[in-house]
Amino acid sequence: MSRVKPKLKATKKHRIPYEAWIHSQLSIARHFGGCNLNGKEYRLDYDNCPKKIIDGKEKYFPDLVEI
Image (cartoon, rainbow, N blue to C red; front, top):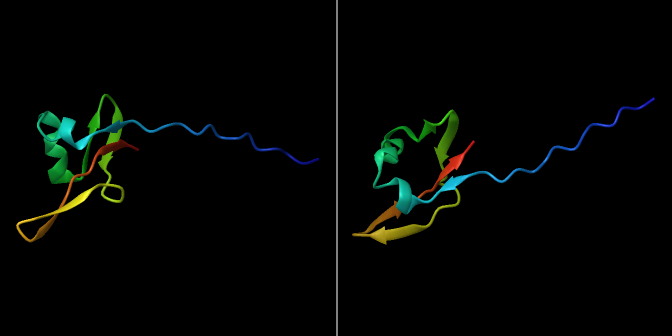
């Protein structure tokens, strides 16, 4: 008798856009790579963020993504 594993639901992770968190109390996340908010853990998403060259330096604009 074989057991069938239940399928896991694909849940959409909550994202907080860069423009929303960078000028708020959540901006502390840039120093630590993330933060906890209402019992949920958020991390900076450097893998999928836009990059711009400003004054000869590459600058990243990551969203906060729920883990």
